[in-house]
Image (cartoon, rainbow over all chains, first blue to last red; front, side, top):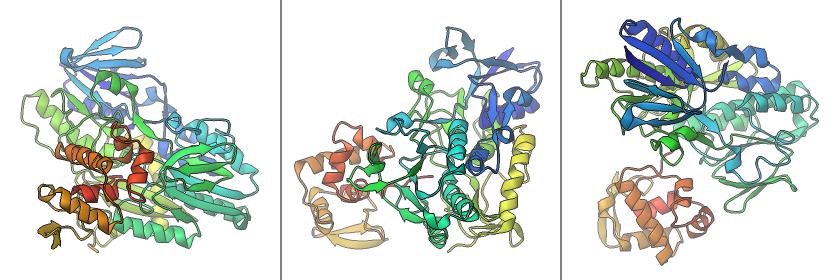
Length: 410
Length: 103
């Protein structure tokens, strides 16, 4: 039997396992997946927990529910990949051999990278909403908060789900309005980027949206440290912003396993060919999802689109053919903006998010770079799609390659 | 894209004033671009510019954090050398493309 090994059973790894289960001849191939944790979190749902819209049960299922029958499942931390020997070492010394390896070990938050962040105010006045623990702690804090300065800070790129902090401040604005204390809450959005978002057209649209909602945007702020005693964040050029509650996207980095394997860049993201999704170092290693260093968003939608490309290329590599498929960096993000509305952006390596309709040109039903109720329903529906279609590797009626149809150049 | 005379030479630049072709760069061009940004270049500045050009030539993407870990300067020093635009201004002066963040 030939061995296909997948490291990481998050969104990308689980989806690939299900796709491969359908495609490969299982008399010929043995499928194994390794992950250190047994719980699968619907991570886009973390954003809604601080506002009491979702609770822990809404975003949690056992990973086992999503593995096809006959898969070898190993719950263990991973020590390292030895690419030259086609071996993976697990913690504790167990060794797995592979013919082909898919790495889907994702990205993690590293609050310890910022001095003063994980200190005495951590989960008291300082929170992340990128972990279940952070999201729940923030929900408890918000429930009886009576107002003050709420500061949302983005200290480093890249980070998972680039629109989440924008959604967070919009939802916070709506939440405190509903509670009748909006006039007592100052909300600011502090970012190292030069505007609300990186790409110009979307940055303008989202910047205007935040202004409309009376949310201050503080741009080009590169966080150096957090002063716990005076409750301030301080940038490298000595600008200071006081806070009563600080919500932050901690610095993101790839798994330490990647560093131990010698396959990563300085942020532990695996050196990956951005078109073929093959490792730059070994021909029988492919990378999907947040674990790679490809220059696009770290988001489930990207993993989904990349999954189709990876499937084609992996099958070709298994048969010794030239890799046929090229990924274009396609990303598609719903942006929840509060009051039952949402925006949508669709973009790739070379085309920035543009206005228009999606997925059908001129029809929609979703509006690109527009704030509509229909876009909000798309986001609500997505949780069902995630559990029932996306993780199970089933087809969605959206092409992997981005299309210009329905988009307007501005 | 347009042409601009910098330090007596015809140079191709983007609409933001970044060099189109990093091979057209020399130290005089760096000094003149820096002057427009109110920066007077020291040896330390040139060390940073050299690092940025080497990494760019090798096809590596740059970030403030990466420069800060390079051993050439730390982040605080980088801000002092290129106030308000540690990566944007230094890239412009180094004759390399405008740093893009790809979120």
